[in-house]
Image (tube, rainbow, N blue to C red; front, side, top):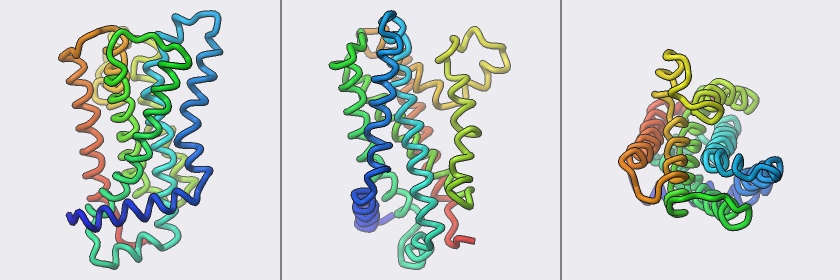
Length: 245
């Protein structure tokens, strides 16, 4: 990998995003809007918001970054931009790292906005440090970016990219422990949830919600989410096609 080429790729992606206000709004504002609506859905039961708000603070950025990243990357492939870039002396790793860096910077802004809104405006009550909550939210957004880059290699159109959401995101959403504790699920479902990264994202948020100190479980959860993001980025680089067809 070449750092100069990676940075050049990231700068190009950020310039393109600057001229795409709808994508910026989806990435930065939609997670905040969902948290805002959730808070006032449970206006008469603030303890319910406290119990699930931290989990959704990690889930919403993951979903939005997955959706935007997969579609934006596929748009470059279908327009021929990706093929022209890979015809240059640009390694697949440089390209994937550049995309990850660009969308990762957006993920930082997204995570700061969503976490700040939840804690200081919507009154989300957590026992642990807000910085740990921000860390997990950022890792979740980066995981969504990595998953989006990965699945874009297998879609032939933007419509197909959207269709990957039920296959990749929804099973994780159902089994992550948001609706029922994972240890109360059927053994087979619990075993499946143990290998899904969103389960560790939710567990990490719940650790911050309930504990004042950094626990070993929190460290494990954060490392699993980060490791999955790195692994998926590597798979994305390995499966990236040099031709559009």
